[in-house]
Structure formats: structure tokens, C-alpha cells
Length: 396
Image (cartoon, rainbow, N blue to C red):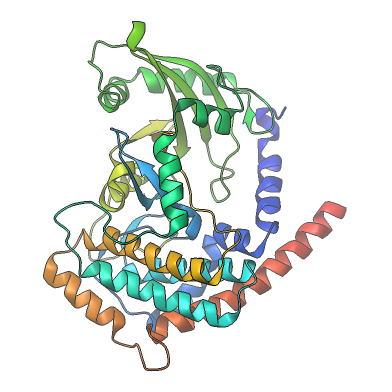
């Protein structure tokens, strides 16, 4: 078991190992590398309307999400990097990870070109859609339909077995969950005793203010890749009482400064937790409306109830048909997340600007294709170097 004083070394090792598992895993975990490239190439990328963007729109950050009433849709599921910025950045980041997934599935390069065309088509079509409702309108690939069906049928026992390896109301300490220091235990008790936090949890659960909220168990959580090294806790709550009492698992995650470039023309929240929650509410209402911004040991944190229906899209073994269908579909998901923030005229203007540089040889913007090609080369070289350095460090 890892004690608090040893966390930093263990977390750094875990992050390096996770990013060394595959080129696709490296791309997903190397947001900094993406924005390093963007800082030198921004002039080649068109600037769309200033809206909330994901900021780290990779394949693993989209998936089924439940709202507070259990209704499920595919939306963006991680908003740590969300800022008011350029929507083109999300399209490039998603295009890069789709290309990486295609290479990981050993698909020929022409399929990558078709995927970027499909991503463009799905996004542009979504911007033309009806934004009066939140329903997902595009035809889903078979794999996504199966994933949504599985998500809808999931219950607490599925979440508990997946996250905790047990259905008992406890958090088992071991490889993923580590013991808390005494000051951390006290800080978490104070956090969930705060009237504003308790009221929000009661509201999310459909409870009255008089209903109790009690911590059952808590632990430090080794989770994610880009978040390794930040404060991260799993907190199990008992909410309500009597026959109406229920167990809830809360993810408490430190909110740090986004590295995604933000617009200078629009003021965004200075508090990082408030920024994340506000961006999530704009981009992914199912998730954003069940998140809480708070403070813990002087740091901004975001509280999020984990729902059994929350899953992520996996693309480990793609066929050519699956790859193209997935790109169309995810382009539509991101297009709706962006488009719902714009009025009709702004959506139309951005759509025209977005597709303006398509040509007869490639039915996708030339700037998007060029960016993806350049970034794939950069990340593959960086991945091999990461593996070399990781192997040498492990040997030493």
C-alpha cells in the first residue's frame, strides 16, 4: 500500500507506464504536446466563434453519460481543459486521436483520410441541425448503439464491481485506492459538511434538505492519466435514511489551470473549478448539471457523482467501416456541443468558414488534414522517445 509521502514517485511512474502502453495511449495523455504544436501553428488554423470548447477532445473523452434522472446520451465526458476558445482546436485534437486509433488498428492510410472527411461531414451536418431540443439525431454506429444499450441497463452493482471490485459499501485499499492522511480525512469531512455542498448533493438525489448525507468511506484514488499527480479522492456517501437511503460514489478531483488557449475577448471564470463546471454545463449538460465546484485544503476541486451509465468509447480494434462511421458520429456529437452555444446565423457562418478550404481531392478542410498529418508524425516520434526514456529509467 502506498502511504501519502510516497505518492508523488508512484504517480509519476504510473503516468509514464500508462503512456508507454501504445501510441494511442500516448496521444491521449499528451495534451501538452498538442498545445506545444498549436503555439507554433495557430496562424494556419481558422478562428471560429468564441465558445466553450472541450480543450482535450480526444476519443476517450466522449461516451455515454447519464443526467440526474438516468437518461443517457453520448456527450463529452471530461472537461478539465475546457475554456472559452476556438472550436477548431477540438476538431484537430479529435482528428488526431481518430487517426491514432486507425493506426493502432493497422488500417491503411487512406482510411485515415476517409475518417477526417467523415469527421468534417458529421460536424458540418450537426451545425445545420435543429437545436431546439437536446436529442441526439444522427444515426448511431452499431457499436455505439450496443454501448448505449449496455449503459442504460447498468445499475449500482455494475459500477461498484467495475470501480471497487466489490459490491460492499466500502472502498478497498490496494493498487488503485490508497489510505488518506489524517488531515485529508478531516478536510473531506468538512467539505461534505458544508451546507452548499450538502444542498447540491441532496438536490441531485431528489432529497429534502432535512435528509442526511453521511461519509461511509473515502480514499485517495489513482485514476486517469493527465490527472495523475493532482488531488483525487473517491468518497462513498450514504444519502437519505431508512428504506429510501442510497449509496453514492463521488469523484473529488483537483481543478488546475487549463493549458488550452482561451479567448482574450470573453471573460471566463477565474476559479478553475467554476470554469470546469460552467464549461461542462455548456458542452455536456448531462454531466455539467451534476457537478459541483468547491474548495478543499485551499485548492479548487470538482465533485462529480459517478453514475453506472457513464462509460467511455473504446476503439481498440476498428474495421474500415467502423472507423468511418465512428468519425461521422463523433463529429456530430462535437458539432452539437459547439452548435448549441451559437445562434443560427453564427452557426451558419462558422460552418461556411469551417468547410471553405475543402477541395476536390479531399472533402475536408486542408488545414485540418495538414494539422492531423503533422501531429501524427510528431506524436509517433515523441512516443518512441518516451518509451526509450521510460525503459532506460526502469533499467536504472
